[in-house]
Length: 120
Image 1: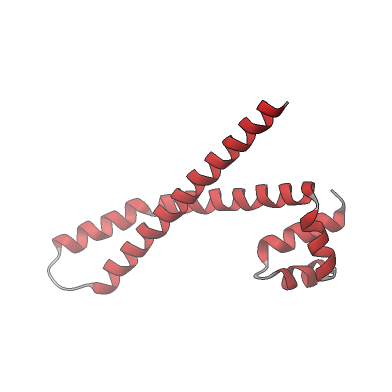
Image 2 (image 1 turned 120 degrees about the vertical axis):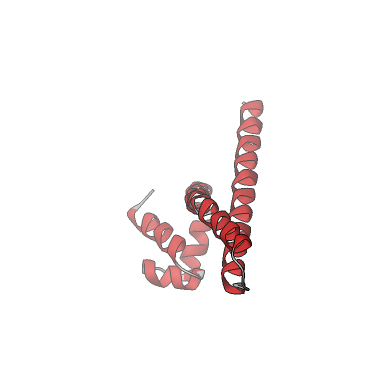
């Protein structure tokens, strides 16, 4: 991959929109769209997004134990700490969603690999 495409890929990973990514990479939006149509570039982009998702899921998994501990403490402590309950619940929900997405991503990748092997 060319240095320009690598720069565009990095920009895509940290930008909110394709327009922002194109500007950050110093290319036009049309050029970025052309890059995204390139099978090799798209493959690298999907791989990088998958890696980021897996990293985020790992970080979220690390929050499960503290979130469960918080819920346990709340359950055992008199009072009404709604903010802590909501924070713990949000952490758990976020972690579960990320874990589900990583599982789906890994299954899709395995299916794609199986299909490629079957074709060859």
